[in-house]
Image (cartoon, rainbow, N blue to C red; front, side, top):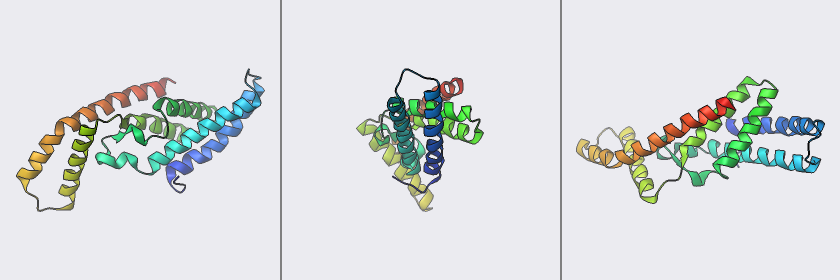
Length: 178
């Protein structure tokens, strides 16, 4: 795990608060779960959030120019991450921590960038990123070659950009309503 970056520090500090305040509140409510079950559930949520923050911190989202990253980069399913982030959001709202609330919402919507990418699409996305990086790195490129490369990968880029944008809108609606 990457322990020094802002995402990790942000969620690690919150995780300690989540564990202690959430455990105390759930126990005080005399829920049906045992103290050990509650502790395990909150510990799992904290572990999921920290593992996801590690993925964000490593810059996985920078792959393919930030358009999309493989869902295989995630530490567990999107649904597990969503549940852990929703629990985190509930605790942040309970403590009225606005900075944390906004950070959790950003992390939640960022899940949209993680998609199941077909092998042939991955190659097109990598080729697109390579071309874009080449344009930025060198000023002396063959314009026809660049245009051909970009036009070949553009349909795949548009496909994933549309998918990510649709899912991001859905996730934003989910987290704003939750």
